[in-house]
Picture (cartoon, rainbow over the protein chains, first blue to last red):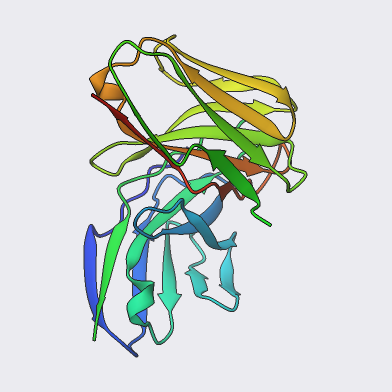
Length: 111
Length: 114
């Protein structure tokens, strides 16, 4: 599985757009890019997943450049409740599900 | 309805005891997992079962023994508990043996070994 690198922490204010970038230089052809969110005392929750270009859902957008060596999770107009740890995962889970979570990015949203 | 549930939510026990944590998913998934999240908040996969068959067994002491009676359940039994076993244990499930592997996590079981 490709190793990922994310900022350890980020601060933002309510109403701002937050972009969290993840580097995955060794991403393989079949790998997907998946982001999870974890609130304190809860299990991780799937946010968004993509393979290339841009993916958008009701929660976030995921931007993936053509070389796929990085990806950016974009959270529009964050609120206090978006304070959480965000994990970037890269992998192709065919034949096995050895999911490796990195340290994640701790996002703190201030009023 | 809770998609992935775990019991108990909290577990406080003495060193040397044996305990079990139960996990059930009602999503119809065929793959289930156990993760351990330690005090430093790193999530590490322990086991994965696909259609009741063990497919991943990370470097976990053999005091930990998963049991999958059916596709909807994956229980974790821990023998001779040690202080270092204190952590939050998460169960998860996903569908399919290929591709995206999106996982759905339970609420966690907070284990404290005294």
